[in-house]
Amino acid sequence: MELVTNEYEFISFDSEETFAIKATYASDLCMRGYFFWAADMILKSFTIEINSPTKSPAPTKERTPRPTALPTLPTTRKPTPSGPNCSVGHTGWVPYLRCTHYFYCRNGSVDGAVNKCAEGTLWDVKLGQCNWDYNVQCPSESPTGIPTRSPTVTPPNKCKEKPSDEFYLTGKKFLKCKKLAKKSKNMKEKICTKKVNYKNNIGPAQAVCLASCNSCDVCYENKKSKYFSGERNGTPVYKSCKSLSKLATNKPDKVANICKQTEYSDAGYPPPVVICQKTCLPQCS
Image (spheres, rainbow, N blue to C red):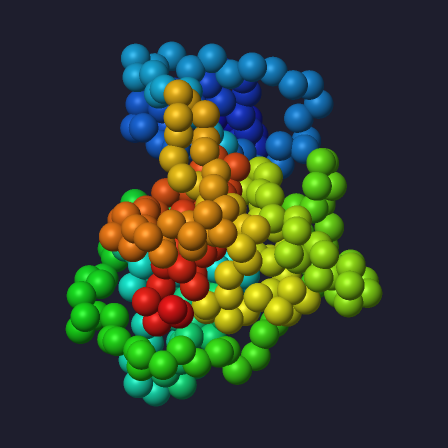
């Protein structure tokens, strides 16, 4: 940094040159980023040239910001093929699917839905929230680490949602749950059951506004819902829960393998086990 002094005081500040030195130092150490205080005091913008032999590849996808606070209740249903499990009498958050997901247990029963951490993050048991994956040491998910749950499916005690959460409606339109809650019963049912598309990793009403759509049950399944089936010639393929349910009648083994998929599409469409629970989860059949 630059330094100006006199007999009784000194002032330090950064110039374009010192900014470049610090940015180059961060790049040499492969740091993921850096920031400067009081950036709003810069009167004129400028470009920093980083003189580093190390060149990081350009990102292919924008990183979702790390959550800053523990969510009050799960908002997106993301169970695994074996279903979310709670130990007897346990209350608290539980990591799942190698810490990429988490759900809440209340008195030994799954309360609400199962969440997925943002891309590049994992559920941090110590912090009680999603954290950058390189900072997380995921505990074992063996039967002793994740106790089993009663085979009887118990609906959640309460079905809640955040009024400020947004869901995808259609076209370029997104709505908040509080708007949906004010609509008539028939309109809510229409939106919850027929508007099932995802966009920009934002789900439809049934996956976000659980109370308004009455979709809190772990075994909730909308036959019109679409799951990510994979890609064909670089194009994502989506199929409905209805088609999967029909296939299960004649080819249960094939459906069992399909339900083991855990990949999400870039748009946010979930794997079948997340959205077609009644077809995929044994305890829901």
